[in-house]
Image 1: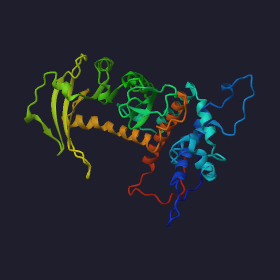
Image 2: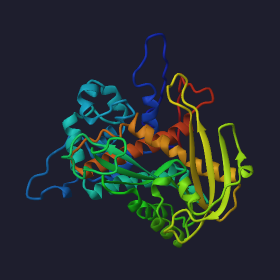
Image 3: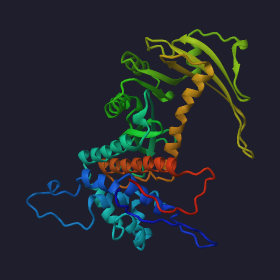
Image 4: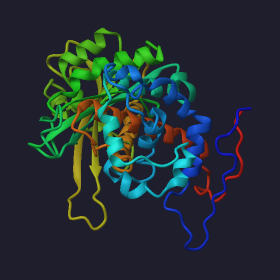
Length: 403
């Protein structure tokens, strides 16, 4: 039995004696004693190693190791710290929390920024390798007989054009603002591969790269791909189908009707009070795609929130699929909307995990920061799976042992 980093955890709240850091002692125990994150960082990350410095100069002695820096930066969003610039103000007196992670104290904000700015492409790959090792040991994605991949992109609006790669591009919410495009591939709700690209990079350009990386990491050639309508193009569909990939993708309602499809009102299937489906069958979805897809049209009523001035809207869209097995129209609808869990990942990443608060002017430093955010989200996903209780509360955690 391995020696525990934290021997005993007891958390209790009484009256107004509350802690702003909640269950972080239990989280720290899980990161260090179960996931062995400190060991992984020490064995893999080499940002502070001598070979990365000018050999003509004496290497600068550093108080914090690579493992100290990576662990400290990784837990910032879990502790509720939105920016690296807030470390000095928020964590300078939290020595007990630092000791839970094996640090004597938390580093200051200048040390955190300087460390991220020394990341190169190879060091970003080292963080990705750590995420891959954790996925194989603790994730569910590596045990799936059929790999279902969800790929989506998120636009990160930036405060300044001085950031490397920050250009005006595909930014629907804030047009004309410089941005990054963050593309992520998910399997079983776990982030497996990612790319941070310049703001004018279209999401379709990185799909094949992400697919090849997922295939290399998980070693499963049988894959099903789920995409939203932003990836709909004849060129991409032709490439995916010719490579033998199965797919399920959202498509334009009016584009399907423009292919000569005639709808019979009696063939609509009502699946709930707000949604009905129409199974079109095999039909082209894009004029430049040489392969037809089976299409299910969706008509959905959206009811506004109580008290909202918005009017009830009626949405129309299609779902195209090319799968090796048959699903009913409702089965296609449910299977495609299984990808909506990745929207929760992006909401958490830009919300509690502060992925949009880019800490550096350098692209590699921001890539490293997003790799640490992804690590934190994956680890917290496994933590919640292992420790979520039926009643949703945990007031006392007794001694845990791991073998």
